[in-house]
Length: 382
Image: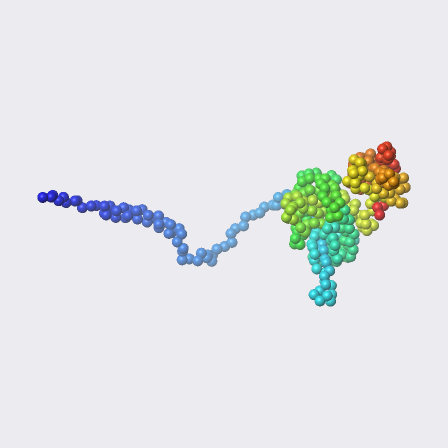
């Protein structure tokens, strides 16, 4: 006979229910708080009685800000926009239209209507349009250019009252760290001013015709496309250079900008206005290329390939290369000018650039293995 045991009733369902109730009781306040915080209200959020927030008093401008504003207001009337125009035939070739090919900047040089800009801004232009600070437009009547220094001078006919000549400074006494201001029309927009410092002096860049421009100012003031030809100023608002190039693979400013020093601009512009061209001194010789000279066994100096009849070198008795049955014979080799060594053709060109037509210089030459000094009076480069 088997005994059957009677199990006590289980209380687990009751305990489970109580646990769920307890959790719900604990979660209800939290759920209510969350719902109150994030549940969308029925109101629109509008407040018809809302007033403007009170404005805090600005106070006086900082001294640097005042200086920046003063410089811009003083110089901006001298800033111009230069548009390079190309002539294009209309659709059916019945007439010729002028269309913009590029835009740059420039500045008023004097009240006679001379405008200074970069040569590359007006290079290959069929016409040029100058827009003054008052937005009046004037077509350039003529242009004088000096590609070696990337400088151009345009002339316009405008009332003197509209022409505010820029204040000229100096560049030979600049110091690294000085504040600079670059003005221009970047990307063809209206006038702008950026600021930076002189980062370096005595830099070299290549002009559009591959001549070396020396003594260039390097600045951290942003220079973008359209700033070319615009003025670079010092903290006195004086012209110290002309913005001419940026060093950036993308063509946008990347922290390195260059400007032609004003000392060079002053001389070149004055000469262009006087003569319509740059009168540069010359020896009247044709030089052998440096590589050709080295192949001939000349390790240093500028080898005279040919002496031009009637030139300064011809009058001084200098000799060029000659050839006979025995071969090619090296003529005179210029190894110094006024005591300064000449190692190659570039050295000679640079040395001549520091002289004027009519100057008498002392050339040290090597002839047949011997050195001698020759006095040469420079003539105008043809």
